[in-house]
Length: 507
Ligand code: NI
Image (cartoon, rainbow, N blue to C red; front, side, top):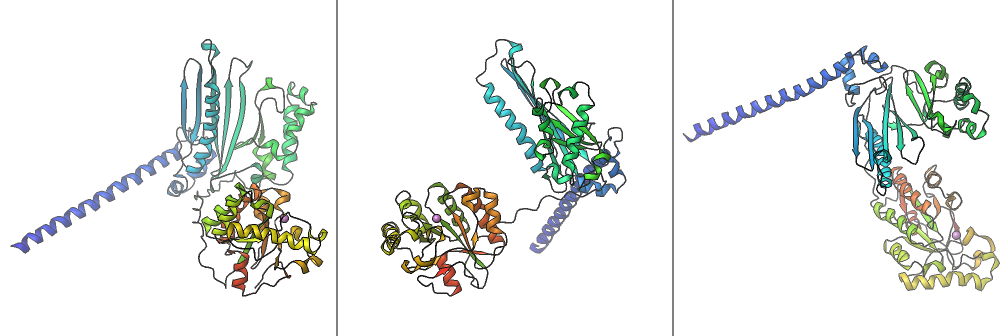
C-alpha cells in the first residue's frame, strides 16, 4: 500500500518535471525565434536599408548575420541615424530648457562612452543654469544635443554630436560638434590614425583647402593664418570625423577654420578618394563578427616567492613623501609585494608615518644619505655622517637601521671606501624625474625587463605613483615576482658585501 503510494508520487513528480522541461524549451525557442524575425525584418527592410550594412548582410546567411549583429539596436534606421535606439532627455521650466538626444547601440561599453559624453554636457549646462533667472520666456537658456549615427560596412560606427547652447547673451546659438568612432569588432573608440596611413594628414589638409577654395565666400577667409593653421596636417586638427558609406567627413567647430557666421563646417571626402590611405577598410563588406573585448583577467596577486622564477626589485629614491609614497604603498599592499625605499634623512621627520607604514609592510628602507649630499665633495667624516644621521632617525622611527645604501646621484669611486654598507644602484633607469610622464615610466619599467633587474624610480612624484599602479600588475602578469633588495639577495643566495656596488642581481 505504502509502496503503491510512493510509486504514484514518483510518477506524478516525474511527469511534472518533464512538463516543466518542455515548457522551458518552448519558451526559449520563442525568444530565439522572435530575435531571428526582428533581425530578418531589419535585413529585409530595403526602403530604410539605405545602408551598406544591410545589403552586405542580405547576401549572407541570415542566421550568421543575426549572430554577428544581434547585440545591436536598429530602431527605425534613417539616412542619418543608421544604427541605435534614440534616447531623449528633455526638461524645461521658465528659466531653461534642454533636449538631449543620444543613441543606445546595444553594447554596454560603447553606450557608456556615448552616454557619458552627453551627460557631462548636460550637467555642465544644468550647473550653469541653476543660478540663471530669465526675465521672460524668450530669455531662457537652452541646450540641444542631437546626433547622427553612421554604420559603415559592418565594422565602423561613427556618432556625430551637434551641441547647441542658446542664451540671450549670444547673438547666435553656440554650436559645437563632437564625434566618436568605434571599431565594432573590438568595441574600441579609435582616432583617425587607426584607419588611415601614409601621407593622409597632408591629404586631409589639402581636402579642406580645396573645399574652402571651392566656396566663393569661404575662400575669402583662407589667407587668415589663424584659420589655416587649424587644418594644417596635424592629427589634432582632424579629431572630429565620421565615416559613412559615402566616405569620410571632417567636422570643424565655428570659428576654427572660418568665421563664426559659417557655423559648423563639414568637409566631405569621397570614399574612393580616401581609399588609398585606408589601413582598415571600413567600406569592405567584411562582416567581422562582433566579439566583446576579453574580460580583463583577474589581477595576479603575488604569493610565496619562488626562487627559481624571475624576480625584479622596484626601488624608490628621495622620499618619503605623503601622497605619492602612500599611493605606491597602496599598490604594493594590494598585490602583496615588497619594494625598497631609499629615504633621505631630512624627509623622515616630515613623513614619519609613511616610513613607518612602509617598514611595517616589510618593504626595505634603504639609506639615501641625510641631505642628498654629493659625497665626492665631502671628507671621510662627512660621508659617514650622511649615513649615520639617517640611520639614527630610522632607529627612532622604525626601530632598525638601514642595511643598504644608495649614494646620491649614484656616485661611486673613491667615496666607496668610506661607505660601510653594500651600495645598491640600478640597471634600469625609468627617468621618471625627467619625464614626469606616467606612460613613459610604465614603458621604461616594463619593457625588456629581465630577471634580477633593479629598477630606479622616485616616490616623490605623483606621475610615478600613477605609473606604479600599472607597473606592478603588468610585471606580475609578465611572470615577474616583485621583491625588496633584501629578498633579492636572500633568494639569489648572495651575501651583500660592504663597499661593494650592485647594479642588479641576475641569476
Ligand atoms: Ni636621489
